[in-house]
Image (tube, rainbow, N blue to C red; front, side, top):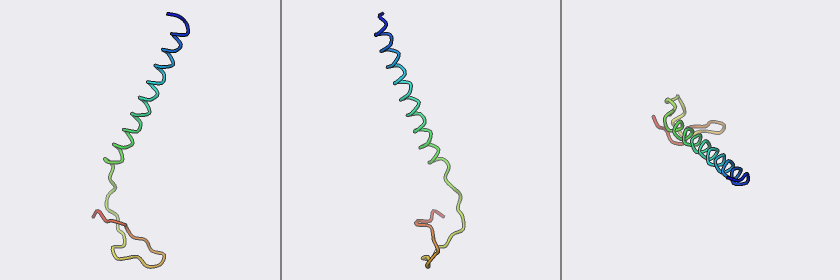
Length: 60
């Protein structure tokens, strides 16, 4: 194999590995977001007044 061909294969391999790591990190983040649902916390259940916020859609 010639040096340019070896270099091209090495760069291609590095790109594939980098894309694989990027994809795995994104899969991990999406999986974690679905698995780690927060517990219910006390919040206003009636429409908020000026300066008060409430949950947009309660899951409790």
